[in-house]
Length: 85
Image (cartoon, rainbow, N blue to C red; front, top):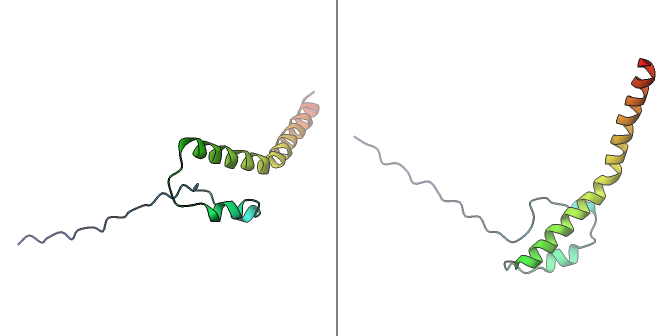
């Protein structure tokens, strides 16, 4: 009377050391290094350097938009301040 449950296929994930963010659309400055990288695990110092490099590259990309946003907020505050006084 009882039906046998079908066994679910187990998904295996392979960590190749790459970050989850795909930043390939932002230029090919390091494409040669990324494609030539072996699929071996990185030691902690290399992994830290790769994470730090990715972080600072993304900060450089977002610096100007952040300044523009802060400028818009400051201008809106200044306009409201002039209207209120």
